[in-house]
Image 1 (spheres, one colour):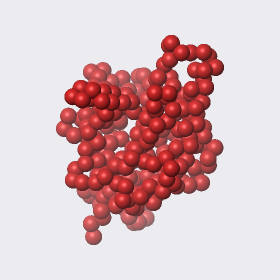
Image 2: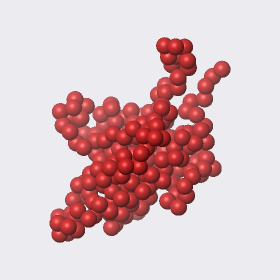
Image 3: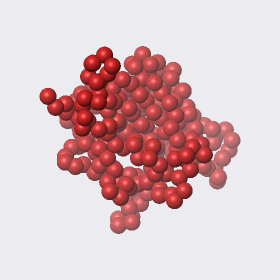
Image 4: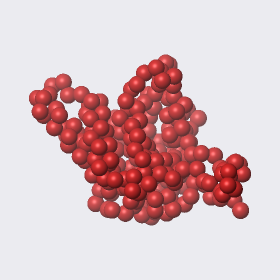
Length: 230
């Protein structure tokens, strides 16, 4: 029997829902602490948005670790470019900061910019594990083991550098230009809702999260590990 891959959104969301409110609280807290850092040092003119993202990620991770996510089966790690990585036996969740930029065609701030190079490691954030050869997924004891479903949480701040919104995406792959992310489904997350419903998912073959851009760089030092850009 062919296994559906990735699983239906309701199955994936069943595993994601327990951590959704924790992410809102943690990133809210992280942004507040980052703003406090600049206020305490009287930094106004030379405000550094990249440092703000980095500090927000640091304090958000502390908040998440104090929330005992390990009891829900999640472990937390840092990712480059102010990212967080939450892993459970079933999910592989990358929490990534994005910035809005004006669309050249309309002048409106609709394009999301993901500040990262295009190393193969980061391309893999957006590509689901293959299910082409199911026999390769048999464990040593003969029990069928599915790979983790990859999810991406994109978070943004408003003009006051407070958390403004988050989106959850189940990526499929990068397109041929490697600058756009096609998704199985994606969901604008509601701050006031403790449960993400499958009915909220925007689906279709294919759905393109068509405004996540990659900064193209000829020299990608992160691929060789010679630079730590966290």
